[in-house]
Image (cartoon, rainbow, N blue to C red; front, side, top):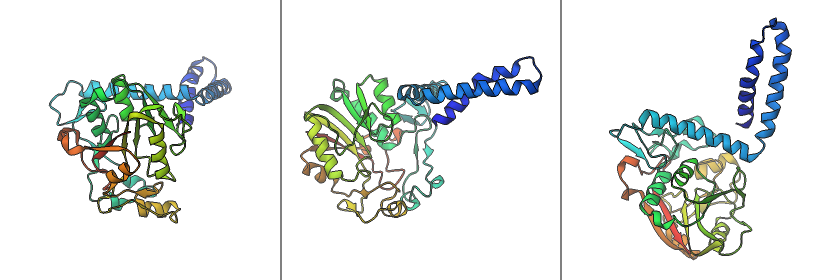
Length: 306
């Protein structure tokens, strides 16, 4: 993505060279030189996280502005997305068929795949969380949130409502580079955490839960979700399953290491949290708070308190 942005920016800035009134054969060298110069400049700039994040933010703002211009005044549309605040004609399909090496298609056959917001790409779990935040805004208004593996749609809602948050990730660009299993943060130092669909990726989910409990301040909140197979009672994992193909077949996605079971709430309480469920069925059908796009993407999140 960064390389593509640099190429496009360089091409746009180098284009005026081709309007210089000199024979075409003599335009090629200065045009190529200017293109190479601007490409190098943008390639260097995009290595700076703040520059890249600013460009991504601008792309999101332009996309949101376009959808608002098209759908903003249409209150009679049947669906709504609380993340971006727009009404829409229909939700889009999740493109699992385009990535057969990543997703196990069997996990998508019996679930509703038409669940993706065409504007902000939110899925049911994101819309349920945003709708719950909106209904219980006093719970997060004065807290600074630490957001692991931040999702663009939920970030959009947090920014729109001026909720203070920091992002954290071990591999993607974020405010803090943190390992969920060993953050290095002080005890009792975090007021609230959002952690959606991360526990299925880490080596040691139990260690990650203990670490989250350690860094949360007394009374701190953790908003958590992960894949739950309602056919299973307990969490299913197998350290001997190490290849991407085997993980895709066993756990639904080639980078998943486990899938959780029906006893998820009891499991979370075992690590010291007071657990409550945020159930999609309690929200209006217009936000489509359903199970999907995979059959383990249940429409239940967890509100945990230390």
